[in-house]
Length: 360
Image 1 (cartoon, rainbow, N blue to C red):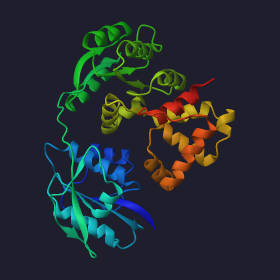
Image 2 (tube, helix red, strand yellow; image 1 turned 30 degrees about the vertical axis):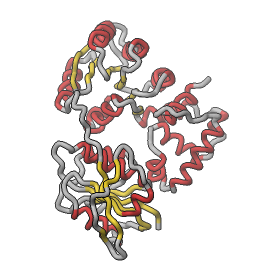
Image 3 (tube, rainbow, N blue to C red; image 1 turned 90 degrees about the horizontal axis):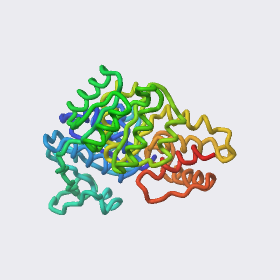
């Protein structure tokens, strides 16, 4: 029996779109075989996922969401636990756009920032009866498109990226096919996001990375998403060791997973860090003989690798089938063994890992 936060929606309502599903999973949610339900190891993660879901569909709300915390063992071949039935019933009571939660959720998370609890709802559910509360979540009022410059020397690929981004609401303000035009275009348009290939004319070397590094020095707020045909671990480390906020490094094959690519672009534009798992694997592999890395236990090494991919503690706990407390213990041990101390920056975990990987 493990403590689980349940997120449910009505059986007759549409489930999460691929983009919303990716957001839920990013918060550490997992989807069991039965529909209409997502499971979380952390209550704060579940609430954040519910808020993200409703904000993503705020103009055309499609479903109500309900949250509950219980000790459950959830297996596909077992009868549905009473707690699951309860949260499903609560979801049925809501209206599209609602987020309802039981008293235990409010007790565990008294301040669900950036949302807040509403005391207007006066009802209860279950036996014994539990009070029901509503979460009033903030609407996204900034409809300004994310401005972006696409730097890619292959015209067909560049046109595809531009079309994909525009269809998803990005404001493409410029295109470039070589090093000099990248510099000129970004300097003239000052976009929020630059998406660039690693290799560009005239030398077909690392012009894309060099342009990104120079432009971020000139425009500190510029977010950069690098696309690469293959793993260039050294180049990734060089770029990421300077400043990790608002940076992403993906293999081009990720562009075929459209929702994943678009989510990554939005995440980087919002100041977060996205590193392709294959690049993380390569970075780790290059440094496996270091004394500090050798001091890590096998489980700590696994936690470190997932940290470098940007996973939260709750997501790591789910991936490795560990308790949240055990993961927190591993993280503290890793920081101690590697002489790394977390700072208040939003990407401190990834930054710490990348800095360690790149140290001589």
